[in-house]
Length: 330
Length: 285
Image 1 (tube, rainbow over the protein chains, first blue to last red):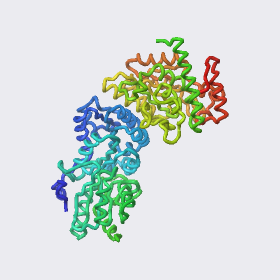
Image 2: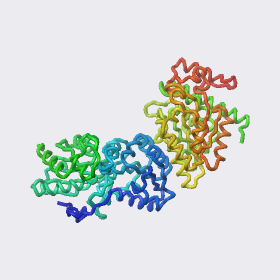
Image 3: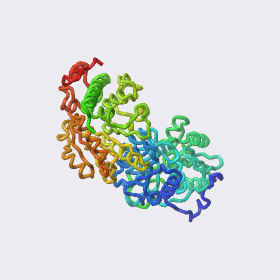
Image 4: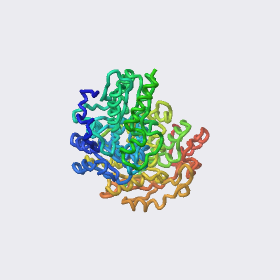
């Protein structure tokens, strides 16, 4: 059942649950961050409306910089602004930033420990009809491997807004991952959000498997947990929004109580959030784990919802993974 | 403001000290680049000992001029200039490229005060200089941003992304200096991947472009001062230099781009430098 203190959306399991684009939370959060601190500046590479940076540009035109289609230059400029005392946010599609400009992010931003926030948009399969070129399925792996970098994957519009505001207040490089499509609103204004602290959203009596999810797929994880509970299989669902540094204490606590783990992410299973969880488990508490995510293939055109099913991240897929993880329990 | 004879002689002596130190420490390190640092010694001497508004005892001073070394592989020249300017003890130069040293093979901002950004991955300094220039403009600061680049790295596409951005935004507080020594690791630049006409390329991107002899102090100083007076354009100074300058068997020879001298070669090179032009009396340091 739901964890009460989380104050999740009351209509979460209703058919007419509200839907909103996660990226809107970035746009709103960026404006809030800009109002709170005049050191906040924003950059964009010819995608200012699509990344919702236009809201900031409208309110703070002198603190917005359009760099054109030049993601490498954008990362470098941001690094320079960061070491000069600004708090730059750079936005593009995740495939291009941190994809195209990965090495500038590594050397100019991470190695310099420049105070830059990287917003990767249209992440996962959410670019849908645009097809595989625009679907970032590797960005969590690309960023979490960098020293000095933090990685946050908000699950909905509210969490995206809170994460953006929080990133501006944290010192150092942060990668924020946003989905394009309208996804269910899971949390509420009042749901606690603390970067680096995983949240338990669901807990059944005598749970047998911890479902650790991030991003909009937290919704599918919750639907799966509810169905499983009705079928007599207890689980814990964790919204693991901060992949680096991970809340190992909470992850291990849930894993310990369950004895099996399923990770759920809209990303390649190689090197993603699930891999990060596996690193924690292998070091501390080895146990069966199943990985729900994209299994080493490129996506294709289609509606985001269709693609999530097509590539094995639907509610049914999560339930199957839970059952096979439980089977492997000692 | 021209250089008088005394200043000119002083800069020549500093540059020669920098060159000797480069030969010494690169040999000692057993790896690294030598031709580029030798070729840029005069520019570093002019910057650190005449042109930059800086304070070696307070490297974090807010209003200092920023020097972004995009071609981080010439770090030995910058390190030597910084040591003589007083950023750190000259004896620390011996630690170049060694474990626990602040003098990393390529400059590291996090460990050595006075290094504005870590560098060594070519083609990335100009973008970071642009960011610093934007920040200065936002804050109404008058300091200038100097970005030193090699000619080989002009082959990186990101240089031209940055050149376009700086030109479009008329960041006149940026002065770029290209070390036009015409060599790179694999050979002569015009054979590896031709850069000419470099002057016209920058001009087409909205820059004020100056060509100078990068070993002529008066020209270096005049060009940098001219850049300060240009109000609506960034300036790029294409400094024509001789790689390996000061040591005849290294001069203009691309094979010395990315290798270090052995003991024997070091001895020969230092002997050449001690008697440079017969003008300089040098102690054995």
